[in-house]
Each structure stands twice: as structure tokens, then as C-alpha cells.
Length: 362
Ligand code: PEP
Ligand code: MN
Image 1: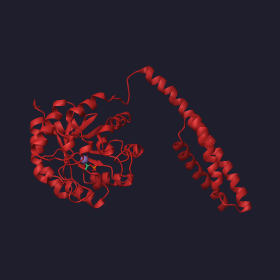
Image 2: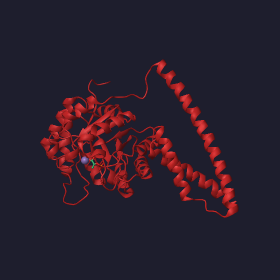
Image 3: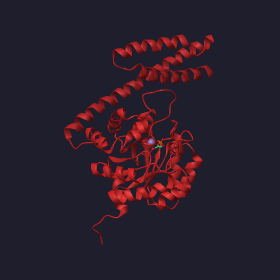
Image 4: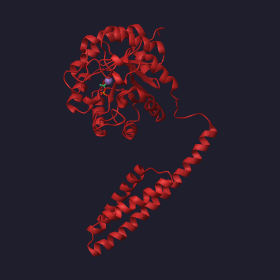
């Protein structure tokens, strides 16, 4: 018989399956009052599906606040009881997994500094064997998709069925607009590699400052991400960790309200017909581009023949600079960025060199 009340499992499953999935809560659990107040104010917005809080904090330097530890877990349990929000925490060791499970945490996540370390990921995976719980895996701090996928594989092999991906950006050296460079294409590649897994954006750790959160959130939604994990705090400026990037629950609700929510598809024949016609044009142009690139390589091979006969090196820097300069000027006139032109020509040039090298070696 179906009971009128949803079981905890059903509530967690409904949250996990919701699109967009909105996860929020403090960077760190600090005190019981702070956790309960944050959870209640988040729940009152009606816009949040899951409560996050860091219990064990991997900090860059010793002496920084390293989290309240397991004593914060009952606070989350209490917050869930008061608000009905399922909870999620970061785990980095087997012991932390056990503690989190003991206190009924609903969803676990693996942090960026753990994903980089196969020993740690394996330890977490071993602790999860035989447990049925959703696990989210943040990208590693360095831009290495193999490492990210490796972590996914280790967790999947432990028998975890529901795995999510969190894109929190990548460390970079020196000052930049972002705390962690988003490198959107990497996250999108990861999503294409793992199409069944929800991809969640963490604008808080990408931005590092609240002023630019909204534009990153909007970009993630424009790119069809499945959800957002955003840090929130009842008193952001006085948060014990990541103060600059946190927002109040009410500010979070305002931001969520001002996002333009886009969908992947719409049920309109006119839209589909127009889109289809434009896509045909794109296919046609892509075919032509391919033909032209093929022709370009044939000419490069002819040049290779001359170089071989005259014992000339393949790479000639002055000629290469001339090509880039010429193309940048032309590209600029038709709205192609210098960055794109350089990347595109680098790729074409590398292919050209490979073709010429074959001729020289023949
Ligand atoms: C966090 O979510 O608070 C955190 C420590 O994130 P990351 O692992 O992305 O640095
Ligand atoms: Mn944080």
C-alpha cells in the first residue's frame, strides 16, 4: 500500500531528479544556530532542493578554519527534520563517509582537492561499497578530464548508481577575473563523455566573489546545466570560510528569480522547421570547410615535396607569423576573435606539418 507520506528515499530521489537541481547552504557549518537558520531561510524561499554544508574543510594552509568535524552532522540532521530538505556534505576519507552515513546525510560529494588524488578517491569508493547513495564528484583542481573521469569510474565500480558531476572551475596562477577559471569547454566535454550524469555548476568557487555570481549562473543555464550549487550564509561577510563568495538565502532567491531559465527543447513545429533549415545550412558549410581543408593539405604536401628536394626545414617562423597576421586582420573584419583565429590556425598548421613530415619521411 502506498502511504500518503513520502519516504525519505522518495524525497531524496525527487530532489535528485529535479531539473534544475538547486543546492545551497554555507561553505562551512559553523554553529548549530547558523546551520538551522540558514536551512530555514533557504527553505522559506521555496527555491532550494537540497542543503549543503562543509563539515570537514580541506584548506590550503594549516591554521585556517578546518571545519567543525563530525559534531556538525547532528545539526544537519536537525535541519533536515525542520525543513524537509535533503542534505549533502563533502567527504574525503573512508571515516568521513562512515560518519556521514551514520548521521543520515542523503547525498555525498567529493571535493576538487580529493578528485585529484586517486588514493583518496579509492578510499572513499571502498567505504561506499554496498551503499546506495547519490555521489557528486567535483572536477579536480587541475584541468585534467582523465582524472575527473577516473574518479567517476572508481565510484561507479564501487556500485554507486547515481553519480553527478560538479563543475567548480580550475586553479590558475596569478590574478584573474575568477577564483577558478571556468574553462567551460572542459565541463561540456565531460558531460558529453558521461551523458547520463547530471552536470551541476558551482558558481561560488568559480567566481570567488559574489558580484559576478549571477552572470556565471546564467551562463551555466544557457549551456543546459542540470543544476547549481551555490554557497549561502545568514551573515556572508562574517562567514568562517569563503566569505566573499557567499550570499544570504534571500539574495540567492532574488538571483534565481532574475535568471532566464532556458529549456533544451520546445514543442513548436515552426521553431523546429526553422532550426532544421539553419542546421542544414551549417552541415553544408561544414562539408565545404572540410573539402577546403583537404585541398589545403594537398597543397601543403606539394610544398613538402619542394622542401624535401631542396633540404629545407618544415617550420619557417617568419612565414607562420605572416599567416597569423594576415588572418587576424581579415578575421577581425568579419567578427572572428584573434583568439579563435590563432587556435584554429594552430590546429591547421599542426595538421599541415604532419602532412609535410610524411612527405619528407617518404
Ligand atoms: C566547497 O564546496 O566548499 C569546497 C571546498 O569546494 P572545492 O572542493 O570546489 O574547493
Ligand atoms: Mn567553499
